[in-house]
Amino acid sequence: MDLRTKRIIVTGGAGFVGRVVIDKLLARSVPRELIFVPRRKDFDLTREGDVIRLYREAFPGGKADVVLHLAAEVGGIGANRANPGRYFFANMAMALHLIEQARADGLADRGGSFVQVGSICAYPKFTPVPFNEAELWNGYPEETNAPYGVAKKAAWQMLDAYHRQYGMTCAYVLPVNLYGPHDNFDLHSSHVVPALIRKCVEAMDRGDPAVPVWGTGSASREFLYVDDAAEGIIRAAEVMRDPTPINLGASFEVTIKDLAEMIVKLTGYSGRLEWDPTKPDGQPRRCLDTSRAKALLGWQAKMPFEEGLRRTIEWYRANRAKA
Image (tube, rainbow, N blue to C red; front, top):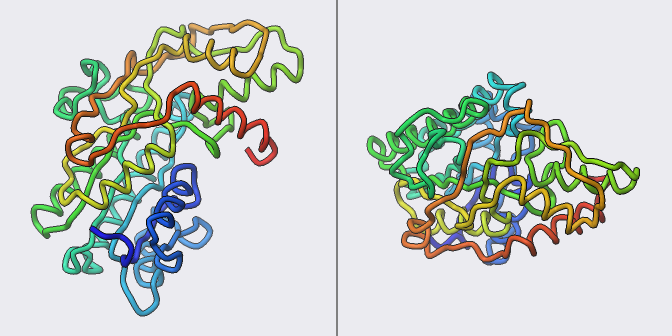
């Protein structure tokens, strides 16, 4: 699909991933007036009426050709434990209304496409490493983020059903843990990379002798730089016609302990890490098989991990008030 002439709705387009997606669409010569970003103050995407109005008002005199659904209510382990009901409802409701109203608006009839961004949290807790897309149904997700993961997996099944019954062109991608500039650095809802960066920088400022870290540090994760994720999402819109699940990852694994020590080194913090084993580690291991993304999208991650962390730290230090 040549996106240069398409009217594109980008939910979450003002967010962490969305702002990079917008930049990449503009770099592909998509005119700015053909990109619509619904803002929460104007459209509550968990409400059917607001989604109906979104499709009606996004492009006066025309209709959307592509929907990139990036918007989500999400957070780290603590936020997932505190908000399981909200995270299930909000993510399920947004996908439910956006997909159904895209159908009602004639997206499939126009040859348009719907791209759903899923979550690695949809995988079973004890998925063999590296995670292969064929394993998605072979067990229940890790308990602390299961409601969020199940909602994202249900959206995939809805897309698959709409593809088979209504001929909707669509795509479903599963990014691994993301990081980069403009991430969420709120300690109550952030993921591990921005949380550790903020803790180390603030500990340096205060002269704290130690930084508290959840868990034992034994769990492993894989991290994908936000620019690489955005490119993968756009490639899915350009080339996919069905919601075959596609992992987006960097194809490496790092323990939380090694990650924390790397961030300590890159921030220049000289204190110690103080682990709290009473707090959960989350899923034991995460590392993706990304061979399908390479085969179907012609995509692979490019940003070296240490360089990506360095850029994220530099951005946070330069934008602490905003972050």
